[in-house]
Length: 335
Image (tube, rainbow, N blue to C red; front, side, top):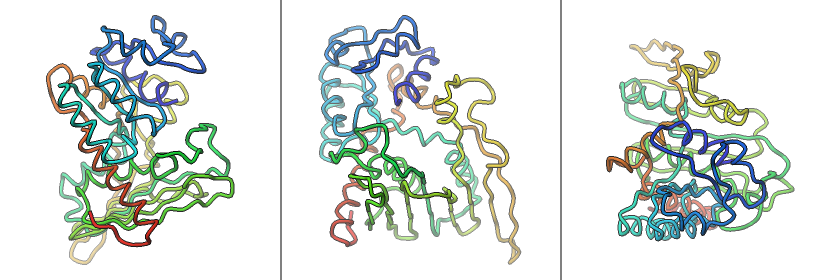
């Protein structure tokens, strides 16, 4: 699904890339979806092809380190799906290897380009919110059965919702406020059928504020995804980016209307004017996952920064490791 939905459409549409093919172990679909491409029978075939410049590693989390390392050693640029690695040590090793091989290494964090988060960042840049006092970010789902993606439900390193949806939320928190000073976490298995964590709450400590991030599979009704309180204003918004749903439906990610949320889903900014609180609806900026590969092309062609660096990916994993330690010890973990 990752390759079909989040990667292939944007690589195919970007004029700086040519979609060559995919390693497909079970179903052979890419040649039908993109005529002229190749369904490779092994990873080694891709690594040995001298015409291939960039490899996207979007396998199960506990294989990211191995496959990314092999690609770098083969002289390829690499995009690795989130979660980047299982441990910070692995992430830092890959960062060092990419530098040694003089290759571009990026972590795929598409939720940076959600309409919700782009709109929030615009308000922050405009000074509408002021200094942060409290931030709450959530990503709720409701599914009482196991995922059909079997690898996500097996108790292997990197499985569970902490390493599935957690990287998105931690990445956004770090973009807003940088690395926290410490972390407290509650990580649980809430469904009777689960073998991996399917709920978490992380509290990230900063000198002037806190960021609370929550996710899980037991939320029957969605809560506001963003509640950002500052000295000048408060922004409340439900998660409503339409890109994933439209990609799953097979829509081509192009045109003027791509990524535009319906007005009914726009967020609300509240401000205090001398004791009088007023609220207004804020039009959402269009979401644009294609921006990731536009930035990746600039990185490869013009040596510009990659969209999400390996160092940023390592910071995210460091927070997730600290969260696991906190949950197991029921204590605040300093970073």
